[in-house]
Image (tube, rainbow, N blue to C red; front, side, top):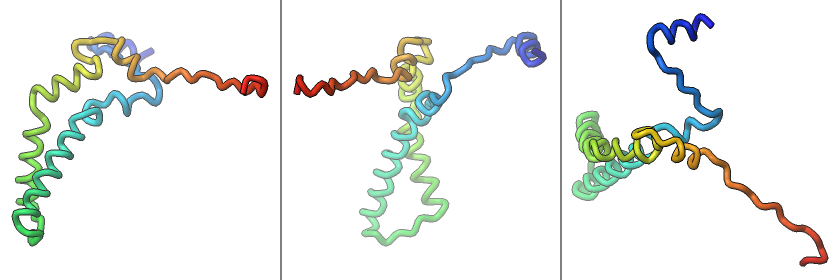
Length: 115
């Protein structure tokens, strides 16, 4: 109870997530890291192609490629789209429930007379 009293006193909202659901609700994993990975791979492939595969990746080259890929992936539009996709902003619990809901599996009819 001390914890709840403290968070209430500090105006902190507690948000409880369903067990085993956070991997589907993490913003970065949903789309932004995929965009980053794609942009980085394309830039790296261009570099390898231009250098005819005769390039060694130094920290400086890595940073240049990563920074460009980051700026492509983490745009305001992409970040806003990711929040909207998860229903976090503007808050839409229906979207969250659809993401987390398990598909209903229909039982198989094993009656041999019906085969």
